[in-house]
Image (cartoon, rainbow, N blue to C red; front, side, top):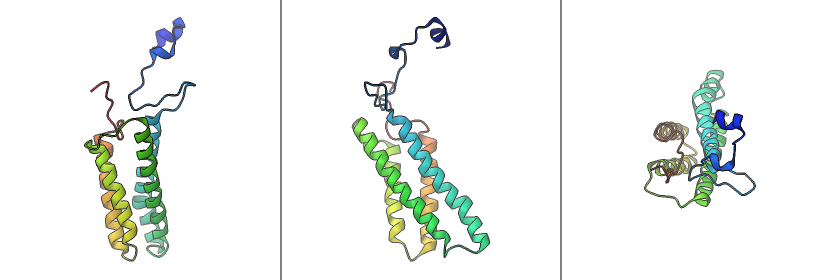
Length: 155
């Protein structure tokens, strides 16, 4: 690649994009990078709020009265991120519902909805958040760069 840059042979045809990348004519939007960014925001925010913010608020005496509000917001933002990820992936290519990363994300979204159904019982909500966090870790370990859809050109 460096040799091509030095020789001045850099052309758009030299760069290969994955099947999940949606590229417009004017040079643009890469869906896979947005999916990775949304997954990072969802899982990073969830892990930070559950494993960093909650213990700090509990130590200061603000949990569960005020600390649950932070967790409600992060769970809601996770649902929004999941919905946007589904829409982006669906518009870039047909989704294969049998793929494990997609199924894990759908289970995480259902558990996030169930989190709000358990509103009066904050201990059950915490168990739900730990389950979502564990599923997120499994999802990340299974498909670090794949997110939802497999690259069809390379198998």
